[in-house]
Image 1 (cartoon, rainbow, N blue to C red):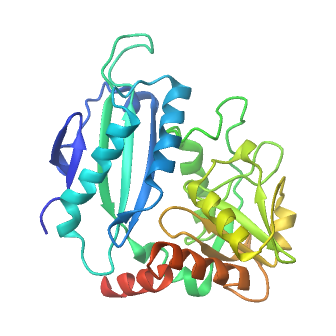
Image 2 (cartoon, rainbow, N blue to C red):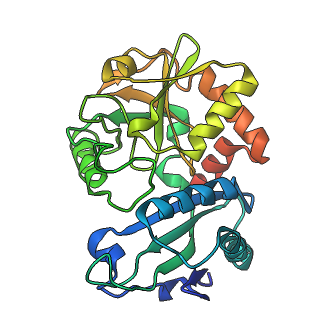
Length: 303
């Protein structure tokens, strides 16, 4: 397979040439923001929405990428187009934009930002089987950042707490997805996904105060409205998850992934649940790809 092509600091280069110096503040201090989309049959899903969020994050942390949002959109599209011939059957890409402040001893030093757009083939093997069985979730001891310290609406690279949470969850269940609580014990999010539960036919969603404003979360809400499924945003605690009829994770790659148990407590009577199945069908119709079938086929082909 030929090497994927990426955009790095003004040039289209082989992915292996996307390298930063040790002095880059993104590497040294996590002084960086990013966003990630995916393709469905080679088409990028909700690209503009992701880029709007990226540029809001950049504005918040006061990094000037020296590229307009329209220019970034064209760059992302070109990166996907340059790699389309490498996309195999039943395969799709994650599309990443990463921007750091560049090199500099202090935040006030003049520096040239590092801007990278690259693709990663989706590894469906990581989660495809959970469409059938449901994924386990653990609430670890490590907490989300307090929103007074770091606003969760910013998609930032300062993620050591999520890494520690993943290690803690793996100590309990090697397959578990950690979902963090905030300092008050309210449910927030996974390292790359929003967490939702279903009670009496209503989708219940943790408040934005502790969670990223996920594009996939917004898609779930939009689809639920079309399907006539009520949604509510509120503070949720582990008690609510333990007693839910359904629970699921939602993110760019797997869209909606059912949860079978939380902290070793079985969730609901049926996995996947009826609301989850309705969301799968509506999402698949929206993107023109059967999201579950694609993942299962791709994972089987890689065995």
